[in-house]
Image 1 (tube, helix red, strand yellow):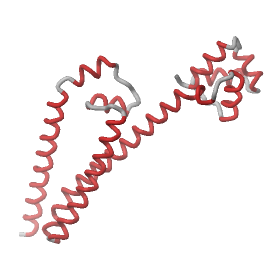
Image 2 (spheres, rainbow, N blue to C red):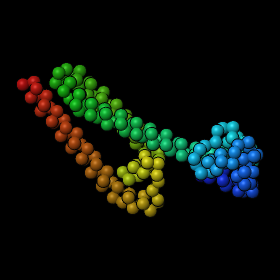
Image 3 (cartoon, rainbow, N blue to C red):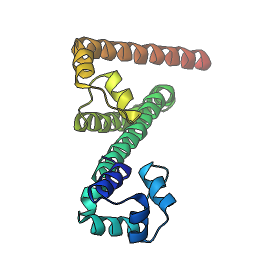
Length: 192
C-alpha cells in the first residue's frame, strides 16, 4: 500500500474527517486532501506526526512506498547495466576487432578487456533479473515500466521460455559474428 492509501485508511479507522486530521497535525484540510489523492507527499515531520497520531510505526505508514522505491531503484540499476553491456559489446566489435589488426596481441588484450566488462555487466543484469524473478521479455518490460504481470500472464508467457532463450542466444551470436565479419572486411579494405 502507498502512503496516500495508508493516510486515508488510518484516518478513517480513527474516525477523523480530513479537517479534524488537519487540525491535529497543524496543516490545512487541502494538504490532507492532496496527500490522500497522491498529489503531494508529507515531509518527515508530518509523517512522524501521522504515525504517532495513528499509533502505528513509521515503517507501517510508508512500507508500500519503500517497496516501490526499491523496485524503482532496481529497475534503474537494470537500465544502467543493460546500457553498459550494450556499449561494451559494441566497443568490442567496432573498436576491439580493428585494434587486433593494428596492435596485434595488444589489440587482442583490448578486445578481451572489453568483452570482460560486457560479461560483468551481463552478470549484473542477470542477478537483477533473478532477484526480481524476471524471466521473459514481457516480464522485463513490465518491470522497467514499474508494472506487474498477473500470475496467469507470467505462467502463459513462460511456456516455451527455454526455446525463446535458446533462439535469443543463437540470434545474438549470429549478429555478433555478422558485425565482426563486416568490421573485418572494412578493416581489410582500408588496409589494402
